[in-house]
Image 1 (cartoon, helix red, strand yellow):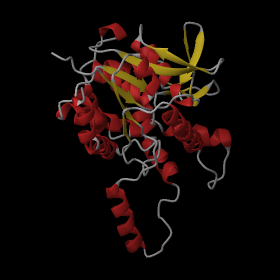
Image 2 (cartoon, one colour; image 1 turned 90 degrees about the horizontal axis):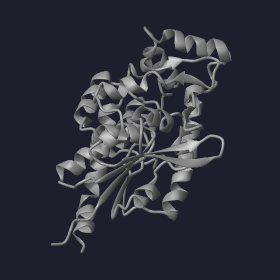
Image 3 (cartoon, rainbow, N blue to C red; image 1 turned 90 degrees about the vertical axis):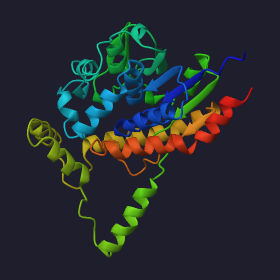
Length: 314
């Protein structure tokens, strides 16, 4: 009897777009596709680790209930240290609210997380020990979150070097690698239709939400987080037309990761590349959870025939 092929799932970085990974995993499970190895970067690591702990449903219920509006309340402002936000004390809460597991060794399948050595500029693969420390490292977006020290190395977001770490999955002996890239720039068909209808309705008028991120931040921090936005504005004394600092950092990183991903995937392509249509989502649009999950699901289902055909090959 021939043993089945070992499937490796690679979940790329992408900030708020990362909830698409929930839909991608659900599509694989619904179609009976096994997942034997998970490799994650940044938010992909978070979703992957919770799936491997058996807690994906809990995560989905949580993010849909939160609807993005309280995401930043889980992080502490740390002026004037090495990042605007400190996730050190809160990542454990965000993870442990869904599962009691704390070590990689407790997960139901092998999980690897990719981070970047800030001093040496090298990729670091984390596969053992504390899940929380590894998550803090792989999710430490430079400029926003403080670096994390593990084994004498200061680590930040793995997306700086390898946003979709296909090579790590291959190194873990995956026979078939399915990679989910969140930074392709493709816009959902639903959004294209919506934008077309809106353009007709606007009849050429200037968009009402010219300063979308500023308004969103203002809404987010109206209560518990109001002081954060105030301190940012006081610190940088920027004019209204100047791009918001968080938007600037996230957009810059997104541009960099998109270019790096293209090069990396050309050099080391996965067997199946899934690119959910998330181009209309800003990196900090945490209030569009259902849209991201839906596009992740549809992205995998569009490639399902190819996935099944590949797994059926002798």
